[in-house]
Amino acid sequence: MKRMTHTGRRGATVGLAIASIALLTACGTTAANDSGGGDAVEELGEMEGQVSLLAWPGYVEDGSNDPAVDWVTPFEEETGCTVTSKTYGTSDEAFNLMKTGEYDVVAASGDASLRLVAAGDVAPVNTDLIPNYEGIYDFLKMQSWNSVDGEAYGVPHGYGANLLMYNTEVFPEAPTSWDVVFDKASEHAGKVTAYDSPIYIADAAVYLMHHQPELGIENPYALDEEQFQAAVDLLKEQRASIGEYWSDYLKEIQAFETGDTVVGTSWQVIQNVLEGSGAPTAVVLPEEGTTGWSDTWMIASKAKNPNCAYAWLNYIASPEANAAATEYFGEAPSNEAACEFRSEGSCEAFHAGDEEYASKIWYWSTPIAECLDGRTDVECVDYSGWTQAWQEIKG
Image (cartoon, rainbow, N blue to C red; front, side):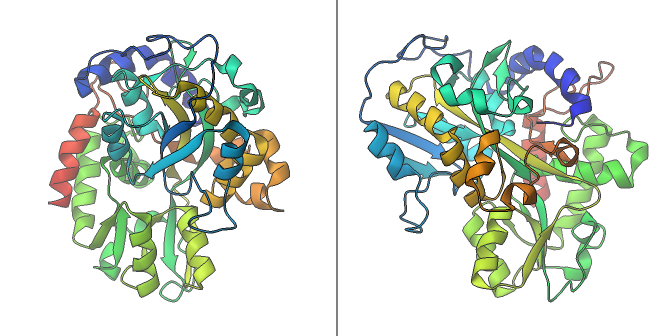
């Protein structure tokens, strides 16, 4: 979900968003798939025997990383669909990998989902063919990042916040503000980290919303030229203190374990791993709020195995599988009944279904020229502008 006060305004711009992103990606319109062109399929056929998945790390676990963590094998036994999978580190990487046509299903965050729709790389889904869709939290369904013109383009998976991670030996008291990676970053120069993606510009915008209110930022993904430049300037200042940008979560784990990194943006799943290894780290959601994700399982428009793809979407949305996957990753589940299958206190820890907590999170969205905050008197900087600026920031 998004900040609830902005849901209506964002929803009203979805049609314009698709047109704008289609031009931005220069990839044309929705391509036909093998089972029904640009329309959702009406009925399913026999399972093909395999399915290829593209997902964030920790979303498709088959016991090879940890024998005790496996929700893929039960799916394979239940459906006869053998799973192959590949992980990615950023939404840009996922977007580019989907262009290869090698994947039937992708788990996409909001900064990729509409681009995938506009590029014709994913197809609408018939939720009537996904029985477990009924159990998904209503506030996650038919949002601007997972639906277009009243059609669902996937099944919500889980949602969560990008958190501030810190070394507890360096910071004996938990930081309360993102200032430790922005205005105070020089105090730990060379040991600050940040997520390596253009969408990280929104993190700077969230900080500026609270510390430079005169900029008038209402939505960190809707930045006019002045607001955008302020965020870029802040990140260029931060660059001098960055030891390493990260997209591979294993590299960030190693950096915090060795002490090469002591503070920066992170995910709960990374803290879970570090806590298990005894590393002196902790995470916090700072007072300014944060960016975050609400991910969607989407089916490729030219899926070679559409029946197994639908089977996966239904399975991973089931209370048991959704519970296992989202708890392992470190996020709130999308299926309300999933909390019955997670460890005691887990859903409370991730504020599952808590809309007040969710109001502190700005879920990744694709920036477009038609400002997502509803303004019509200015143009906002679109994602191509963000991408160009990010390269300048990193130098």
